[in-house]
Image 1: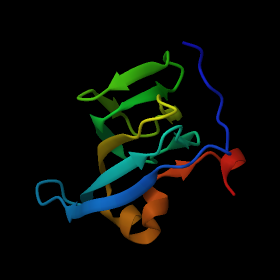
Image 2 (image 1 turned 90 degrees about the vertical axis):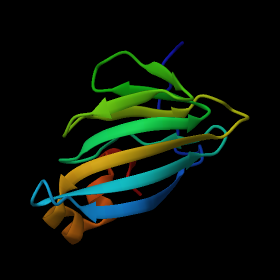
Image 3 (image 1 turned 135 degrees about the vertical axis):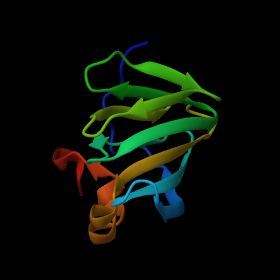
Image 4 (image 1 turned 90 degrees about the horizontal axis):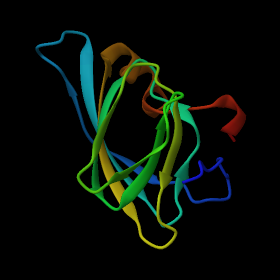
Amino acid sequence: MEEPTYDPSRPMPAINIAYQYKLANCPGKSIVGLHVEFPPNGSTPPHRHGGSSVSAYVISGALLNKMNDSPMKVIETGGTWYEAPGCHHRISDNASMTEPAVLFANLVLDTDVLERDGMNALIQIDEEYRQ
């Protein structure tokens, strides 16, 4: 399958914070749960998650996923992935033009960064795609 290039005319996913907790066993760290709903043909611009460690689980549908310079993968329902701090999430697209896709992501990051920057600490879209 050929790798798509980001197209800003495609719909963005709905991203909602499901929870946010300070980690008692990791002082200075918090965990945030994100529920992400991709509409059919949905796409996220290339981005990073700052200093966060991210794990993700596909609840339904299938996603196109490319990290750094690794090959693009199709992650289907039940599939997971991990993003190390600073990882460049180059492709994050719904694989379907007609069906939605949903994922749940857990991000572990510095509490002070989360409190200071909020959602901007969680998702940092590449500068050339910011509006």
